[in-house]
Length: 222
Image 1: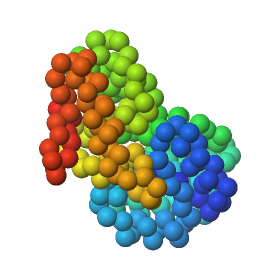
Image 2: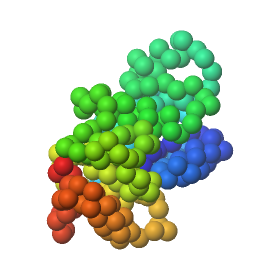
Image 3: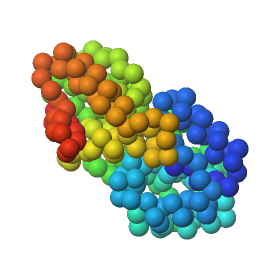
Image 4: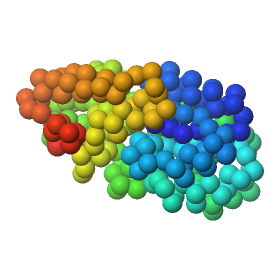
């Protein structure tokens, strides 16, 4: 899930719509809404955030410090104009990347994933045996051949691979894929996505690369 912070509702709604078109969950919040949410959000909700996208507002340079006390997800700033002074100020404040508008959400996702890989000492696709998982919108490959997956199944696989050192719950996966503010879909939908994903991988590889334990959740085991 991606969190967009901007005082302009038209900007927030535009990015939420664009993320949705790519099959990604997001939520748009104003400054006060965001501060209230991040101060009260549970660890499970915060763990579902894959990136923070900050629009252009006066207090933006103070936000990285606020965010870092609660989350290690990448923080990107949207720039309405080319300004070296502003860019340097944002990087000094702790922003991970500054992106000039207009920008496609695929680029935003690619940039946040690149930041995540640097932080976690990974320089590209993750390879586990015969399986290679990308983080730029491409389908995974098995033995060098693409395995076409629906966007949500691909996103679930990417999320599990990113978190392969720990087990994640159904709720965490749901929050990441559908968003923590989505009341229109029941989180049991994750079980259907996971069942289909595991079956496809098992048929191609010959064994389960995703370990499922009732009540405990899922873990990518490669």
